[in-house]
Amino acid sequence: MSDLAPGILIAVPQMDDPNFARSVVLLIEHNESGAMGITFNRPSDVALLEIGKEHGMEVHPGAGHAFIGGPVQRERGFLVHRQSDLGDSVHLQEDVFLSVSTDALKTLLAGDPSVYRLCLGYAGWGPGQLEREMVAGGWLNSAISSRRIFDTPVEKIWEAVIRDLGIDPAFLVQGGGKQ
Image (cartoon, rainbow, N blue to C red; front, side):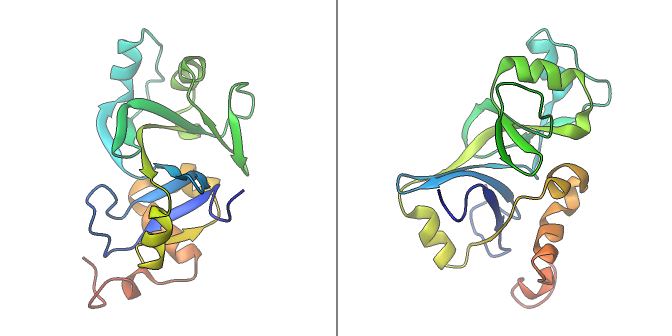
């Protein structure tokens, strides 16, 4: 068991990888073999209605878009949700669960869109890579907060999780101003 996973990674403003600019990542796994996480604050252009139509599933009329979970295997979907009664889900922390099953997708798409995030793809790090990026100052880390994942407006998640750490995001930006 890692001190980092399950947990949250927050990209600092100086992160030069465009895949992770101002990203907040739900870190699922971290061990000597590497790390795996799912970004949950970057909406994609893929409408959930289209995904439902493609798979012959009913979709709640208020459903929005899927999220960009990361640069690896973007055709693969990960469901981050707060529905404890989905049997094939892994409980991460608090009321945050993870599922990759089609049955879970069918159930969640038809229900309340505020209880889940469908994230396409994932972020992966090789052995020691995440540790090196953290030592270089590329990431902050914190505990999982279902409130931030599901209840905070997506455009405010990055700033909110940094403020939860007691840090003013303006102090992280080179030159002290907003980018």
